[in-house]
Image (cartoon, rainbow, N blue to C red; front, side, top):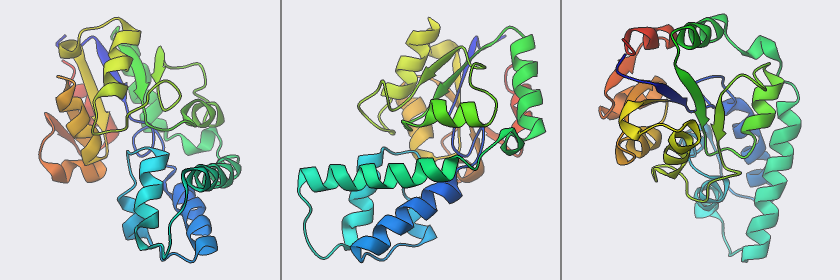
Length: 212
């Protein structure tokens, strides 16, 4: 096979938490008196919490100190984690689980490459807490996509060279990060429109045709 490892973004690829992100950011924005809608929320996909906060604050009529920004980001995350408690294994699509099992049966190593600091919690909620071989996320990286760090570390954790890793992403920033890491990529969802991916997926199971 061409690849030895597959690195998956989490939100929007393995499962969808966009709605919970939106509700948490909206609650924070409302408290700050900042306009926020789903179009702005889409700009936050695939980037870090603090980078997301900077986008939310673009319309803020004032200035927050570094400490106030940290407190706002923490407030949003607490709201988000409370919403995530609603998630369960029912939020994992059967097609996703079947595809992951098929990839593993072919001997491929599987990793998560996510900017989220809540990746492990989300995986636990949807019944994949111990499923992936390695997890590279916001708890062990400092730079957000399109910086390649999260995918570079995932490959290092797997013990694989970049050229034998395939990244699966739903955000343009993630596809750019994969390219910067020297990895092929498979785009699904909104990422298809960026036109930069090695493969485009109509559905998650199409991934099986990309790995040989």
